[in-house]
Image 1 (cartoon, helix red, strand yellow):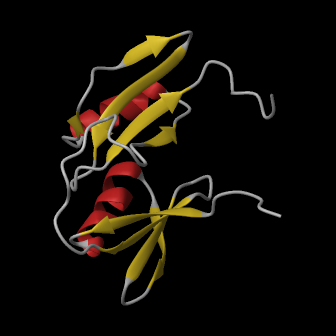
Image 2: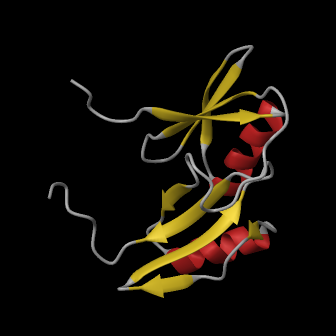
Length: 127
């Protein structure tokens, strides 16, 4: 039985530099390294596997088919936003609020889209 998603892989031109960015900028920690991959772990246990990329990165938008962003949950949106601003993160939107949910989209150094998310009310576990 499938119990969840352990990690998501991101193909990178420089896995060490990208891992350092996730650690220094987002507060992740490195929890595994091999010759071909580095795993970075968020406080809640979710992980990203950074692997070596091959070929050129295609042009993408927020609506290009495939995985388009990773949502990063925060308990204090304002503090997280100020912290990322101080670290010169490249924001691609202004902070937005809808139905009490607060979000802002930004990119990592390789152009992968992320966003901060603070929900007023958690999504239901089941429909």
